Amino acid sequence: MTNKDELVTIAVDVMGGDYAPTETVAGAVEAASAGDVQVLLVGEEDIVRSELDKHDIKGLPIAIIPSEGIILENDHPA
Image (cartoon, rainbow, N blue to C red; front, side, top):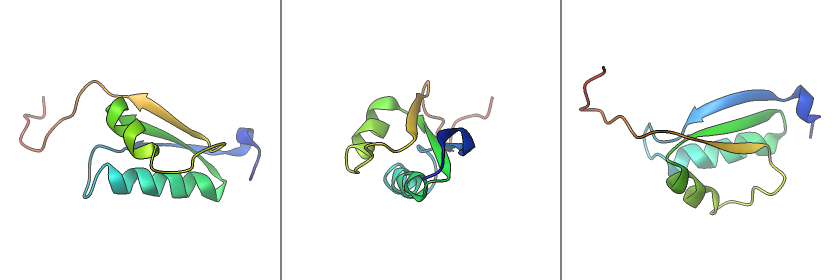
């Protein structure tokens, strides 16, 4: 694994997309395991934490950034 100062930080909206949040969290864990990225998971904290509990993330550079709700596909953009 590289030095934490050398990691590229990426933020992932884990609440959107097909099969979210299960597949987006799994992909983020896989990316963090590769050793060159720090992953910020953005979404409903309880849901994201529940998905993370399914993975061994000890020592991985992963953090949760709580969101303030979910925008659904039928919500008005403003």
